[in-house]
Amino acid sequence: DAGITQSPRHKVTETGTPVTLRCHQTENHRYMYWYRQDPGHGLRLIHYSYGVKDTDKGEVSDGYSVSRSKTEDFLLTLESATSSQTSVYFCAISDGGASYEQYFGPGTRLTVT
Amino acid sequence: LAKTTQPISMDSYEGQEVNITCSHNNIATNDYITWYQQFPSQGPRFIIQGYKTKVTNEVASLFIPADRKSSTLSLPRVSLSDTAVYYCLVGEDGGSQGNLIFGKGTKLSVKP
Image (cartoon, rainbow over all chains, first blue to last red; front, side, top):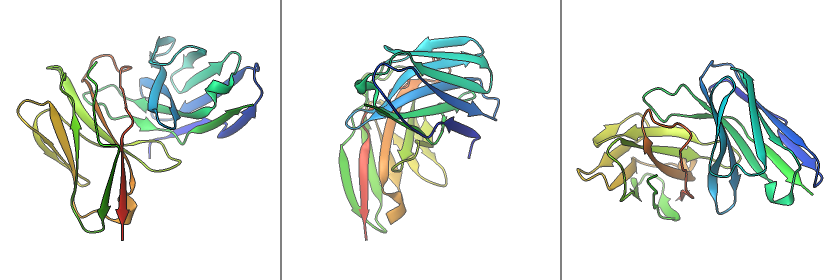
């Protein structure tokens, strides 16, 4: 399996508090992604990065920000968590070559009460 | 962006061949077709990718007709461990890597 870890794996937080999720890779892949997965919606892209300090928005970026200061780390921040952001968050990486093969992390289950 | 349509669910029995068809009527010339598998409480896992005709690997085969408006993932002789959600994706290879749309997938249930 590709070397991707996510932390924390589970988190419960209150509405209005900031939350940061971390994705760490050891594969030196250029591209990193954050998805959320909710029942009935499949996976939806939040933000992605195509290099250090290079990021762009995905399908459901409102309420989220990201940062990538190092190749190996991609942070997802919820500035002020809301109950609608309760979800499972997956990080993924790819080398951006001639393939849409992405490697996914184990996921973070976030509950906003 | 090309959207995909797949059956919501399928049932099968161990040992049978399973074919999951995905419709992508507005696929663009540069788009590739990619399939992922997801088990409960895990992230998706890449299965196979193709552009046209047939692609086969150790896990599955992917059949793409000449008009490329659909594709079929074929799983030979499924087992209980193949019970999972299967996603069909269409996107431009080498293009904007952020524009993958997973959709809701097909939930495959394999029974003994």
